[in-house]
Length: 475
Image (cartoon, rainbow, N blue to C red; front, side, top):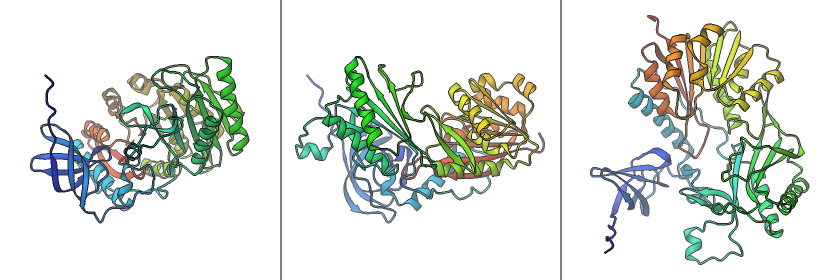
């Protein structure tokens, strides 16, 4: 006999009181903590519990009694479905307030280190169309919204070009308008989708791994250059003919695309780091500029996705580094050497370390482009490269700038930093929680001298944070 499904409760007239992880808001009902998407502090709502554990629950707002004064009207037609930009319902000044609080909470509750007054968060001048990179997926399994299901909407085909639905790897929401990048992204995506439909070019099936068109990536730069890369599955001559039809359409219809590339990817995943990128038309790279410096951005390059705000982030890092021209600087997790180039003119020597070898190739090109001869780059796992022997060979750093991935720094890396004993450490982080953990490990030898949050991703809960650490005088 089948077990009867437990009925989950409806919580009535609940006040939303705070924000939580993953862009959700927070409510408390007796001893139960409830996480709710698409609401903001100050809303009063009925909550239908969708999932319940012992001490917390996940719920959906099904009725509103009061709307918060902190609310804003979402501007995207796909809001609430595609899974991105979850904070569109929260006015931007309040987004910044909660991001500032997020940094404070992480550094005090997790780091438990003594802090100076945290500087005001640096907001993004652009809160729409701020990204320089977007990726869209082709799929023959279009996601139908609840509204479309209720209206029994029928489509001639179920192809979609857009974003993956959270929790459904093979379902893609067809995107008509995205506000994350300039309007060019909409003209490109919609034009390519419509052309492929007219020409009956098959979209990819993520379960059977069949079909030609797999994904597209758009990159733009502040110089006006545009890169478009198509990924396709090509198993026969006809597949190649179909791919070339799409590429020629793009070349003819969108002359603003200065770098038109493609990758033949017959693997079961969309990663292409190990695959050849072919130039169909134009250049194989685009260039970004910042303070007169030029940076090569290829299809496999990492570059901060909010170019204009990245400039402000790097200015904070450089200010905290307080360079006079005589310092040896280590730039850890250097990527393509953007920060290393940015501080090179104010340092005696800069050593960059990065585990992605292709990124280091780009970093060396960038140093040459900008005419710097005081930059040296090394590729390899940080904990294996940054050792005591490495420091003894290349010199003790006066300043370390570190910008690790979300997981933070490996304990061995922290240990080697303590051995290196720089005067100052500038810690740039995209995850204040792991940053706080690392600050605690450094606390015996270093005090936090300055903290500046920077908002790189408006309408999301993500926040960058820059911390200056100074070596304690008794060490």
